[in-house]
Amino acid sequence: MKRILTKNEEQAIRLCHHDFDGKSVKEAAECMGRSKRAVQRLLCSAEKKAPQLFPILTPRHRAIIAMYDQHTSRKAICKGLSITAAVLAREVAFLRSHGFLFNRTADQYRPSMDADVKERF
Image 1: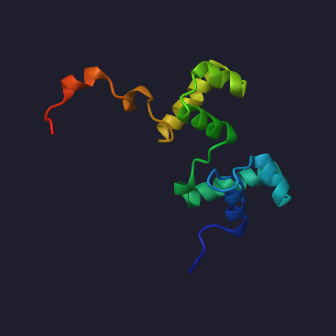
Image 2: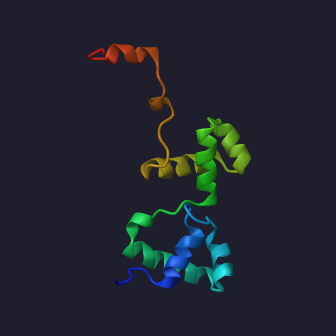
């Protein structure tokens, strides 16, 4: 069976991907004994070969998802991560567009939804 990814690309993905170690590119570069740019090139090459493994979430993305799951307010998220509201809005838009976050209010029941029921069981 032919390999799609090289061993170095696989190692870079395992070190950086949020499903595995979740290290930053800088930390992965130190583990691999390579430069940060070399690891970035490996990840770009791997993304062309196996796009289903991407995007890779950063530690900040994972923290935002965790805080959203705990229903933390946007103001508290900004304060906890030391980021501005504009940066948070950009990160949330990215996470929503890639299916990692859903609209909080859309998932909650509201009494006004009763009028939209077409058939009762």
